Image: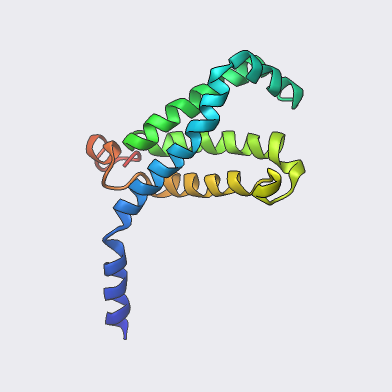
Length: 146
């Protein structure tokens, strides 16, 4: 019985790197539309940040858009995946606190559900890394970034 569970574990380990690649690309894709929306009109984004009481709205509008845009590229490439995942988790925490929290849990009410899912995947990337199909595994072999 012990051998059967061992064989099953090995069988399910084969696609893990493909799954991490697919998840990274999908999460990056999920950031594209909100990032482009903010980037399209940065002054309006800063005004919106001000209306939802984000301190230093102009600074944070540039910071958030910069981190999100950089995150899209780095997640797809699998480069500095752990670091960018932590930064994107901080942005998701801000989105939960400033935008979604008052709307409850459900995504249909613009609640915290979707940002929580993003945070879960980003936590997985920050914990396990980008996987074998990533620049991290080529450039930083054997280091924290791998």
